[in-house]
Amino acid sequence: MSDPQAENPASGVPESAAAAGSSTEPGLAERLAQAEARASENFDQFVRARAELENVRRRAQEDIAKAHKFAIEGFAESLLPVRDSLEMALTVASPSLDVLREGVSATLRQLASAFEKNRVIEISPAGEKFDPNRHQAISTVPAASTEPPVPANHVVAVLQKGYLINDRVLRPALVTVAQG
Image: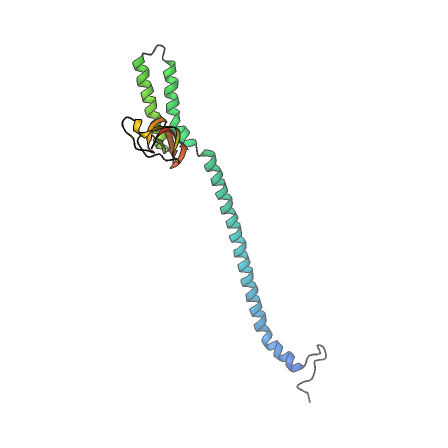
């Protein structure tokens, strides 16, 4: 007669426990295999996502480097006709004053067009309130002595125009300001 608690001589485990373990072991092994498969799949997705992130980062750095390298290209391209006009003016053998004036006017229009195309905006603040962010005061004059009368802290005269590029001051306007 066999004892239900009799030990298996090979393992030292009771036969009833070994029998019970063998009935649940295929379920554990199956769940373990599924968990390992999911872990392997998740790891593979992680490695792919990390590689994609590195590729995006590298492409972004290359794009930024290209943008810095070629940022001035459009502006330089729009200035080429201005240079061509100036060089052409120098090749004329004996230009008259009217021809020179006309050529300079045409060249100035080309330059203004290039500035406009590249959003370089002129600051010419005559009569405006003095703005230290856009204007640089060179001198002051008493407000009462200006002709026509200009209110205190307003620009009386512009000695040199200033320029903005994309709403950022490239060069402040040099001005004389009325002092009150």
